[in-house]
Length: 496
Image 1 (cartoon, rainbow, N blue to C red):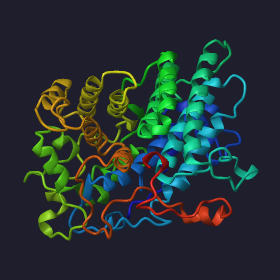
Image 2 (cartoon, rainbow, N blue to C red; image 1 turned 45 degrees about the vertical axis):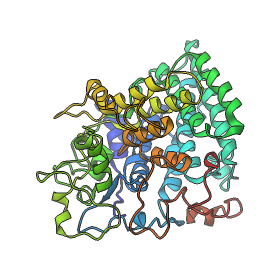
Image 3 (tube, helix red, strand yellow; image 1 turned 90 degrees about the vertical axis):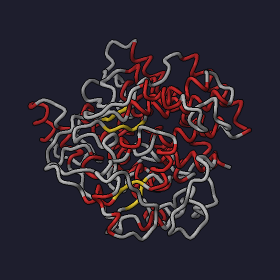
Image 4 (cartoon, rainbow, N blue to C red; image 1 turned 135 degrees about the vertical axis):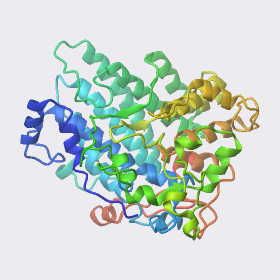
């Protein structure tokens, strides 16, 4: 993919968060943010959070990989942007930035927050919660990863790899610890509480506890097909219920105050949308819907179609992956990424959707772990609709209700032959273009949505189920990095 940039806005946009005086102070800090020696805590957190958004939505981003693997996106005529994706060319350089940048940027920054000492329990909690967010992604992409010995820098430059299953249970402990730290800090008169430096929740520590519980549910949902984990899931789910803070009530968004100026735009908009002058980025012109997803949305009378995908004056048109097409499929004639995804240069960056949270809870409820699966399923669809609203057009809960009232399989909960398939299929639509990697993980685990095509350029009969460890890791940590797995058959532990 021809999409790499140097993201100077990572620091510039965070600097813009503060007033003129604090901005000057920030710019006076002459240090590498990955090796901070004099950076104050209120500058570590927003940089880390912007790194999270950047890894998800910029460059060879996590969401782009998910969107390609799940047949959401394809390529317009005249471009050769996505040959490796269409060929399923998983090797030691394919999306290696997910591993390399994940450990180098967000995880290292969040780890700093866990080492601040007395009075910084809230920051330590945020560090643990966000490390759990990233570590789960790492497990879901790679399996076994460095965890207990990771992020020690020169103290241990060659960390051991932990079993993926043990990382998962370790993350559950970390998230519980984070909630306990927040509770303890609430009773500490000298505890420092984040404020505008928290560009996700504005220092609302109850919302951080809700996010911790929501991440726990994501973990438990991924484990929920494992017979050996049913007792564990019940115990952990009961503990979440007893804790009492509940779950997220809105999308989780990174928003440091993006601006319509060079180097300060939202990373997703800047990478996949438009320049600060308003001209189309090459990535925007290159990337379009598959005809399959357009046909699917049309067949179910789904009003999200023109929010997920831009509609040319000639009508919606897609390109199925890997096809050699002519000028009839030029960028101006195909459905590029839609206005419900790319809303503006100043939009916040969604890193976890309320829709996914509801669908995860619906799946657990379906499997007997509390709640009403139909109500949660319908709430997931409603949240997905509302998320796509933008300045020029809105989708409402009433629109969602009219949609799922149709007596269609995988649309109406009651009309769906397989309730799990309905949940997973609707989650696929809900995270389309936002956190699409989650639907790839679901597909590897469940095989849903059914009948999903593969690329015409693929040399296999199915899509990959994981990534390779990067070549850089094999070179620098050869004594510990596991043997490369089979990317098409060696599933992550929760899918076996």
